[in-house]
Each structure stands twice: as C-alpha cells, then as structure tokens.
View (tube, rainbow, N blue to C red):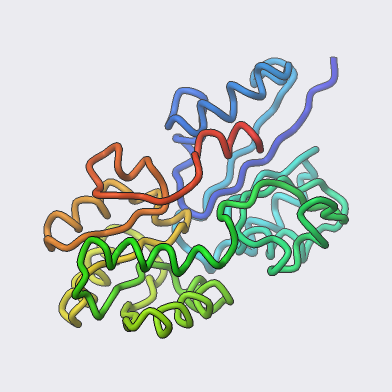
Length: 255
C-alpha cells in the first residue's frame, strides 16, 4: 500500500500540538483527512515543522522541507509560502494565506495556476475598515489603535492598506513590530509600549505567531483594561472580548 507524505509547516505552533488530539482546528484537519481515507500511522506519514517564532529560521526550514520532497506541503502564512515558492515550483503547496492573488501566489482565486492553492483567511483587504469600525463602536472616542503583528506583517501591503484605512476613519495606528524571538516576553514588551503610547484599543493581526500565544494575548487585554479585536473565535472562547472572522475549523477542513 502506498504511503502518502504530508509536511505541515507553521511559524510558531509547537510540533506537539499539530496532532488530531490537539487543538480543535487540527482535529478538524486530521478528521477530514481520515474521512477521505488518509490515516496517519496507516497510509499517511506526517512530517511536522515549526519556526518557533523565529522568522530568521523560516527559509532554512523551507529548504529542508523541499529537500525531503513530501507529496504535499501545508504551510500557514504568506511568509512561509514565499520561502517555499523560492525553492520549489513542482511540489503541491496547499496553503492558508491572505490575499493570494495580491501576494503573487495565484493568478486568480478560481484558477490559481502553478503549484500553489489553498484557502484564503480573509474576505479581501477591504475588511480592514470593518475592523476599525468595530473597535470604534466599542470605544467611540478612540483616536489611537494599536496593531499587534510581527515585523514582516508591518512591511507588506496588508499593513499599508490598514494604515490607509486608519487615515480615512480618523484614527492613528500605533505599535512596535514583534521582534524575534516572538515569544511571551516580547508580547508583554510590545503591548506595554503600545498602551504607554496611548493606544485605546488593539487590533490583533491574523498572524500564526499571535494564534500560538492567544492565551497570553487575551490575558494582556485584561491586564491593561482596553478592548482587543481578535482575528479568530478561538480567542473569544478562552475569554477574549470579540472577533470578526471566518471559522478556523472549517478553514482546516477545506485545506
């Protein structure tokens, strides 16, 4: 019986969590694979890779994944896809990204072309203004909003669209990019600096590193007593105030 090989690549989630008995979105992923007849320990071999919140390692990990030549690669985030894309144009990449056409991963949503397909995590960059509107509904007087995101997210067109949206809605954007290693103390430092700088609400980016530290981020909102808008319902299920997003479990079933 042929064994199929799947490589999962995440920027920050511990390898031990990328299992069917782990968080609900991984249960959804492996449950759907099982329903389709791909069973880990049987005809499916899963190789797991984590960047552990250290962006400087992502390129080397991508090179290693391509070297072992799995049948399919499942990366999470635009940054990981970009690294993989530079090493292979042949291995199928089924990715979870935002705006795949804008980032050059797909020719169109209906006909991606090339070796990259997958699921987009947002409804288009126009959703940035909706995020800001929601935060203003919670705190109508807010004039400064923090953006909690890794350095790479600040440098791409996603951040540029967000900054343009803040100028149209009459608020200013604050925030220090999260620096490597993107771990617990870095979240405490950056959140403290944003609050000290006058942030009256914080938008949490849909970055995989943030998701890996969602328990801490929710606690930081409570500690600083300001509203955070989260990118996924999982944050709300553990005590977060509000989210505006698609269903993360369904994303993983579709992957």
